[in-house]
Length: 98
Image (cartoon, helix red, strand yellow):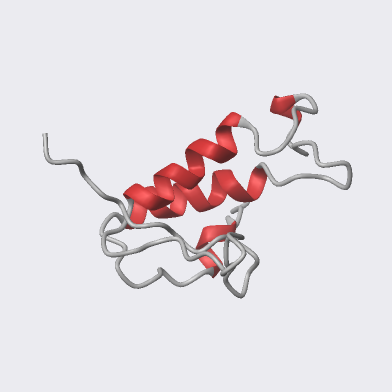
């Protein structure tokens, strides 16, 4: 049986990740739902939906939930700062006091 590699297998876990399985799954979904040259999701399941598609947004949220003490950084102009792989830096998972 041929083994497949997933993008998350070649990336080290970021500091603060408390749920490695969720983070790796979210990384793989996000990698599969990146925009094409026109700005549409390149994944066949999304059938050309504009990016970010719902699976990509869910993957970004899952990455946030997979860690604690992480926050998405923004530049002074309000743009998201991106890490060395081009992915947005994660935002802190904050729970409201209910």
